[in-house]
Length: 190
Image (cartoon, rainbow, N blue to C red; front, side, top):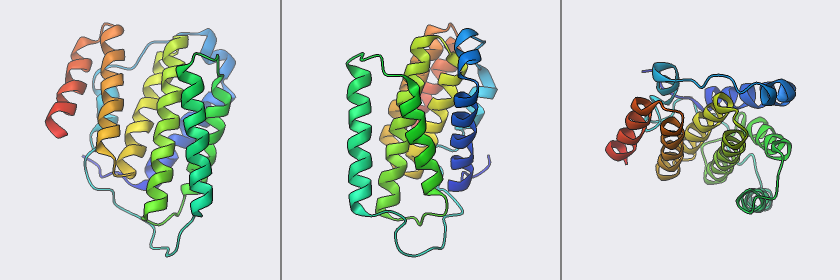
């Protein structure tokens, strides 16, 4: 099992959001096959392992005011999503891309952890939006990003919540073995 690193997690978040933003029309037209088995679960292998490679940079990459404002934006996007306001993913993806860019080289401190958690919430919102539109493979990629960012934020309970949502998706898609593995992981590790 390869250890997760903040840079690897941010590279994954950048890859999926950039691909999604560039290929939005094509992705939404084609439902595409969902990822199953080892391809899906292998990416989640280190969700409770310690991260390696934190920046040696000192000081904070974020001000407290910036983090509070970001958390308000995430709460607003979450509330819009919950209310069924028809929120397009562009706003969510734009904020997720900005968060991952800003986290590059950030030190392992409390403010960076809060920003990683905000990124995890944004990725989970994006996953839910794509799940609802039938873009299941993209949804799964965002769920993986959410688990990874929650791990970087040192929030295993949020990561477990995301894994439960991913397990539900696996069940809904008929990949019950993947859903059972995801749920077993949640029960065993939390």
